[in-house]
Amino acid sequence: MLHITGLYASILGFLIIFLAYKVVNFRKTKRVGIGDNGDKLGMRAIRVHANATEYIPILIILMAIYELNGGAVLVLHIIGIISVFARILHAFGLSGSSGISFGRFYGTAITWVSIVGLSCLNIYQFLLKTI
Image 1: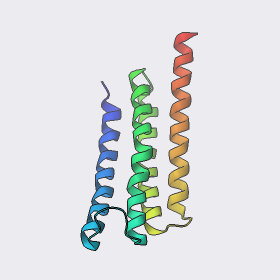
Image 2: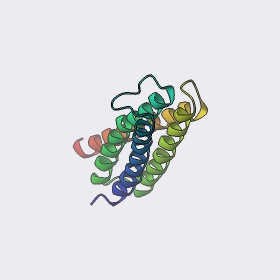
Image 3: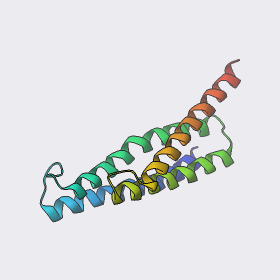
Image 4: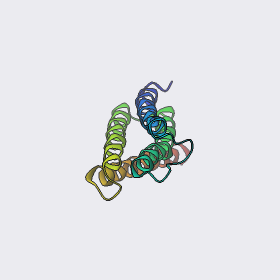
């Protein structure tokens, strides 16, 4: 069972829907059917949502593999919590500025560390079970 992964996947799922709502609201308000119509705020809303949909699935897949292979519960919760924090931080950072921002930089950095960490943990588990 993937109880822990399910928890964080659900929380991140709510975040994706919230970010999608912001895109839909922009398009409705500005009457934009497709794209951003050159609107900088719309472009950022679309990119914030797209970025979340680019990174969250691999985080969830790696968490699920780690959990299915008997990964440590505490490690899963730590990675889950910091991943949620990172994605929220990134969303607020990019929503506020298309340039460099604290939230955008650290949200991305923490997300990358989570992905690399989970990848290493999964490779380590593989090596333990096959060697």
